[in-house]
Length: 420
Image (cartoon, rainbow, N blue to C red):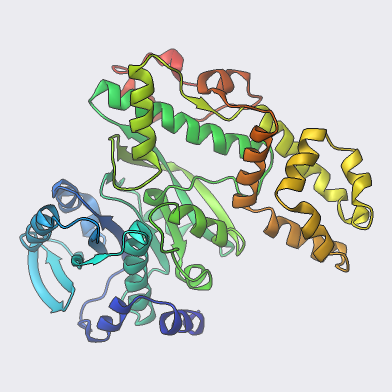
């Protein structure tokens, strides 16, 4: 593991990791949590300070950042100054500040990436990568004990059992997604977030129904992954959104991605313009649709039936690799057209000399989370148009799972018969 991580740190890590060479040798931690923060109040820092997690020897790496398209540093400056009041500043090296939290064995490692802003196109992906790379460097120095890197956001409330799961995971597991729910006291925002969360759960439930190996949530605030797998995948992609999706897509090719059902993260339901797409912009869109009395449309459930059929029929693809047209003859026309549009023919051609074992392995790697999404979009373009989300849920041959905590907290805001 150390050789793999050392190679990553030498070739691919961000420049902030060079400063870790002078990190105080007396400061050692069991866990690490990475939190990017842009346009955030200090409330989430207070949540950390008031939580039981600070008694569990954790280093919270907070990357206070902003894009170079934003010249106003006021919010970021205020957050940085607040962090300095939470404990004792014991080390400072250029953009890094280490603060030992009061009455605890945990600390904040604050990264200043607002004085030197992040290029807008690299966005939150670079912010997460800086934080994770720093944690990786400290793991390599044996100053963080756990090999697991935790990724979350400033709008979450981590449960008290957050770290306990790492003692139960098998060696084949390279990443986990915690269960989650969104909540707001504002009824309209809560309902819009609930609708978007239903869409997320509908999509993953559909992938699970189809028996896709890429049936996981891609939400940056609910992730954890092993340091070795992170290094092998070359870290978070440096992009303004979707960095969680692309990292998990790479990690899933290295081992298992598990869903942790009984450890539930609460996420503040809110609107946002911090990223070009994702939860915040989707909620803005839903609020606009609701204000206009319009439905929120999402994938037709039949796309998952088609996906299930394809994944099942992939088992016979190898034997038809020299006569692909015969394999296509056994598929629905819409499925054939969609597979051709995403490049299945080229894949099969390149694998013409492979053994069945090699072919099947490469097929699953090729038909990954991204290709699966492209296939679903191709089905939509071929005629399986989106329908109102609630109609899709009612027609689907699978059911959604909503955390009990969410139902209990939401019964004053949403009618219970809306929970599936």
